[in-house]
Length: 553
Image 1 (tube, rainbow, N blue to C red):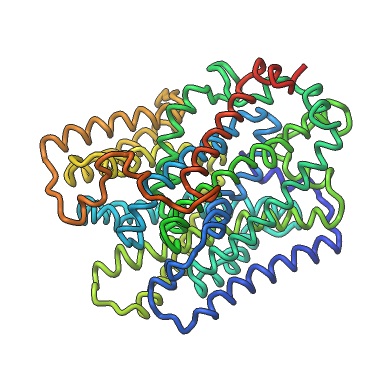
Image 2: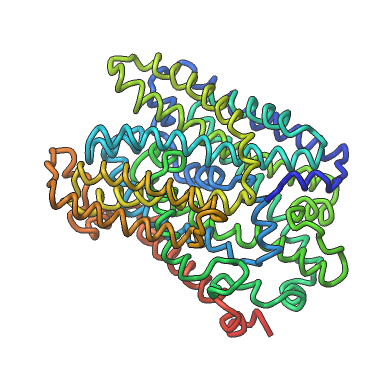
């Protein structure tokens, strides 16, 4: 995706839009700094890195959603909606199933082990070397996957809106986000993330409503596009290049890492007030993940329908879809809100990644080197790590433009990174015999093997590699699983009193905790979310199911 082409769209920004955008910056940065100053007397590292263990389920759920949704989603999903319809919505609708897994099976262990980082969990379950490897890998992934792609995408869109040079936008956004993240720690990240989620949803819902009204509702949409574009499960020959089998095989692999074992995401759960909040927060995020298909993908599909109706000219370059939809569908004021939503997606993702970098560096690297470091100094080290991480990300952002397709590029990177981590965490939680030797060898060999396949993929014109990345993720998982099984049997694990507590003797043991009563009970919410997702897949699976439910004639 050559997002530089977005700069040619020429969107007109009115005074009221600048006022809305200015208010957004003042609110977010102000609230972030206020969160930090409010806790300035608190020197305990837990207060800075984990918000003092005080996060409630609404904050956790909103922060999980806002950290996940970045500028890549807003821009890339609009284009995907225009070109391929709802096919890539699978990345959103498969997420709730993995958030259920996080709520039921992983969150309880994370809270009970009182960890600050996921590498810390691996040390308690396996060994210190596993912790070191995952800590380094997590810092690298936070910089490249969560920050670099996000900063660059947002900067290119801001150039199209205001004519600001890309590097100026990157630096300004990085500075503003870094300031409140350094001062406020996780509490600032979560509180601002909650606000940013509300802004993000408000802007995106607004453009969806306006677009649907303009096209003539669902009936007008369905009548002016190919019916297949409204389906999510496609065959192997579909132009979207996302066959349904690759989704069901590959997404659980990358999804379990992303939602259950990625520090940037899971850190919100680690700061939960108690186990019930740690379980309910991800489930709340799961319900929110239903929305992106309708508020991020669908506007792009609607814009295609409007083009087919002759209301708008067809896009010369599909990468312009998001910018054209904003300027052609919204009135002054609402455009400012959408820009604020874009900035919210950018800043919430970057701030979440920066906070995870500071936590990983402080707890998993520095404190292991100097275990007697006092809490107040550990906080200062974390703030320095945040600043350095931001600088490294800004420098590395320049390389992002070398990727021809940002959205699919980032998913490809995740597909080659996730399998060994997914394997080690899944075996660690569900199989008592999985050993430290097996875990370490799986992390190292799986990461190196994944890097080899990634290089083969990006240089496919020379290597001839043609395997879709979602299939590659599944095949890598199979290789890592075989290694984990064999090495665990050859080198049995010597459990400690702590490590044996971090394995479910029986998966049903995860449901023994009673939880809250009523609708807020995590078991009830899990069942409701699971059923809702099955119903959505049943409705939007293919053209036949859409006709059965009356959404196609």
